[in-house]
Image 1 (spheres, rainbow, N blue to C red):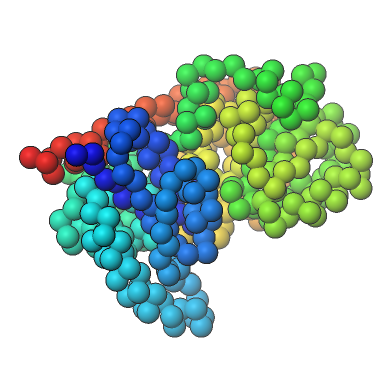
Image 2: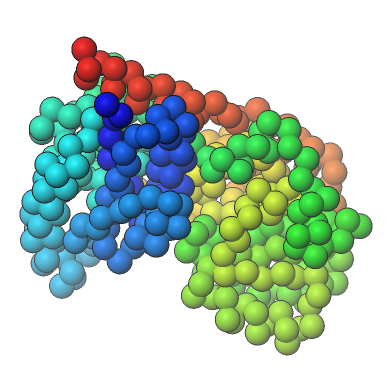
Length: 372
């Protein structure tokens, strides 16, 4: 009888892409296995997971706001409703292992699964754990982490240092795939010019976008070309600004699906400091300027970025300073070959290309233990 895997994670690409990567890897080992995802209603996983070929069910759940709002008044009701629905889903699907990659829905789902004695595993992508995983740590069986020293927050016996799983197409870059010529042709870029890739995360990043828009003239005069993922909400504004400036070397996209090609084309990347973004940058070995988002729990993106800066593997620009210094820093760095090479070497040394294999191995161990 083939196993069944229940996977819960979402809210941002940083939770969704690892979840899909884990499912894809498990499918290779168990082609006939059953898969079901659990996400939060109205969040991007409800769209992205079906696009990846998997079934998903949604819980009525959202985060607790850090200030007093009307939304917080419904939070206890949402938690209760989500726990009841998660229990119903688990009773009906009967999973052999339940996996959480973070996000609002993973809390109720993993809590119910652990209470029923089902083997459970969570992935903590960041250098500073989120509140959901902190609460789940005592209940779950295994905790896969991407940074050393996570025993400060989790039971040491459960912690396994694996790194973060990345999308399978990004993984090919770690295996030496040379996609640069294909990438330049795909995006209509010149092989004679330096290329900067700007990615603000799957939802975009307003500060980064405003910094780019405000310096389009300087970018044009510098002779570099730009691949710019704006996010849906800023795309129309970015496109209008590019057209107004008649900027042929700036290619704006709401969302770039072919991220393997985007990385392959880039000489330098400007990015938020989400855990999965950093893992992909390490795999791709790309010199990077990280602009941590200030709008995340416990300021964990700053902690992620500093972990690289301390190893001279990336440069950090504060969100509050981005408008004044981000583009100047990027345009100065892009022509500094020696510094680019140093950043490339150091960030590539931090890559964990076998993360997905290790995580899959831990899941299979839980599966085999359950069968004994």
